Length: 368
Image (cartoon, rainbow, N blue to C red; front, side, top):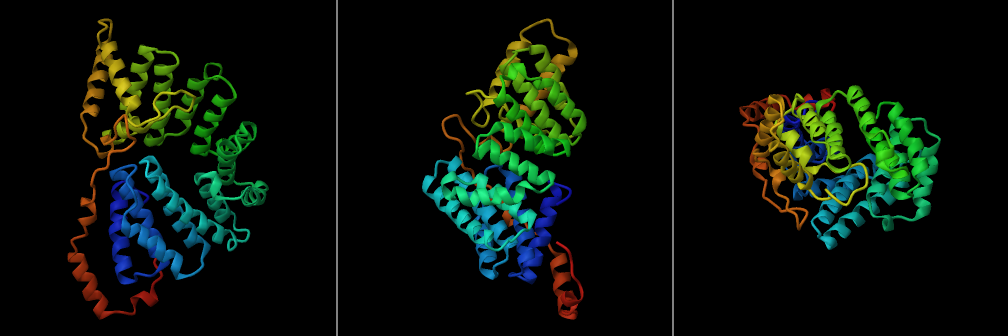
């Protein structure tokens, strides 16, 4: 899983084999859920967790009262609640959010002072509807974490004050700490907070993102950064030359074109606007604007080439295109990958090896 997306598929195949050997081993279930979720989200960003994932989460809850296992199950239920909310399936959304929150309440009694687990619990609480938890329960988690010096904790506390309390000054304080420690998510959320504290045209939006572009050199993160600059020059300044310049920078990133298109489908501005709240909105408007720009004869050969490259990306057929303007999501069956298994001449080899030496599991302790 260190080498996505192909590594996630390989990891899922191995996790399938591990679970076949020991179906109730919690650590294999957790690795399997992580790999399965990554493969699912790569195929379709907002695809519902499958029944097999829901069943695996149930198994984690039933094996024993281990908080790390319960937290992982609650995260899956939380994701299912959120996706059902996007699809306007309110009853299903409420059901899964309640499952998630009920498990969190049990987990809080078990974690004691484990910082990582407390942090995961607070993050999941933030992602659930506010009515799922009492204020005192949330405040107790925040109190326990507030004295911790940890950039991951700073990030989650920043999100808490941003989303839950709407205290943007405190959110800025914690997210600034996360940014100083090199947290990408904290850095992006900090820009969002800055744009809530002041009008975006009074904040050095492009300059700040350009500095982040130099710091964060992962291509996927750079796509996120540049797409925000493209949004700025489309909405705030309406600057065709800058749009073309940054679009070329975007297209030059050393990453698959499917990632480039998917990011433009789902990108939303960090500053307030009533536009681009739904998938494909920005991509569609960017396409229309570029066609208008191309009617201008005063364009360089490089700018025209950028337009041609952008059009090639538009023609890519990826599952995330299945969104429309009226509903948030148009379902599409995407189960074919589930039928793919390692052809396992390896499987036969494993079965043979298992028959010859059943003691190997007791002698080895493979790390997930």
